[in-house]
Length: 207
Image (cartoon, rainbow, N blue to C red; front, side, top):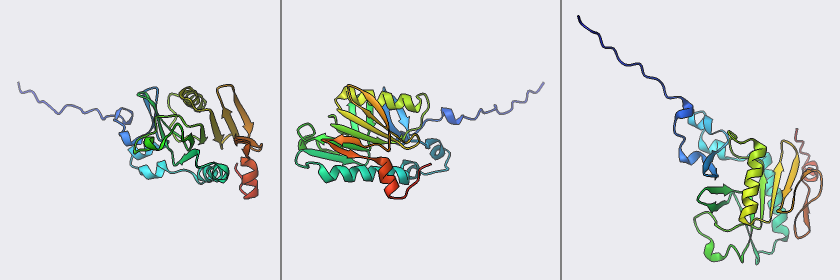
C-alpha cells in the first residue's frame, strides 16, 4: 500500500515571538529592554524608525522652552547642559535616557566626555512625556521606577512634564510632589518655569 507523505503544516511565527531588533530599544531597565513607542508599526513595515523616534511638536516645543530658560541663567563654567536624549549608564542592568540633563562639571569632567553614555549622575534631569512602549509596566510604574533608579544613582532632582495629565512631577530624595502645570515651579537656583503660562502666551491650547 502506497503511503502519500504530504508537506508538514508550517505554523507561522507570531509577531510576538519574532525577535525585536536591538535598534528599537530605547532604554534598559532592570535588565529588560524597553522599546520605542510605536515599535510594533516598524516591525510591521508601517513606519520607519525615524518616524517613531521623533518627538511630537508639543514635546519638542516644551523641551526647547525649558532649555531656553536653563541657558538664560546657567553658569556654563560650572555646568554642562546635555539635550537630545543624553544616555546615562547606571550599571550593567540599567541604561536610561533623558530629555535634558544638567551636569556639574566637577562630576562630568571634560575627560569623561566621550562617544559613550555618561556613567556619572546629572544634577538635574528633565523629562517631557514618555517615549517608550508600555507593556509590563504601567506608565505610572515606569515613571516611579525610573525616578527611583535615577535618585539612587545620585541625581538630585527629576522633573517630569506630563502633557496628557497637564501636570509637573518634581522628585527628590526627600519627596515626590505633583503640581498643575499652571503653577510656577523651581527649576534650580531660584529660577522658575510655568508651562501653562508659556502655552497661554503662545496661544496654544492642549486638550
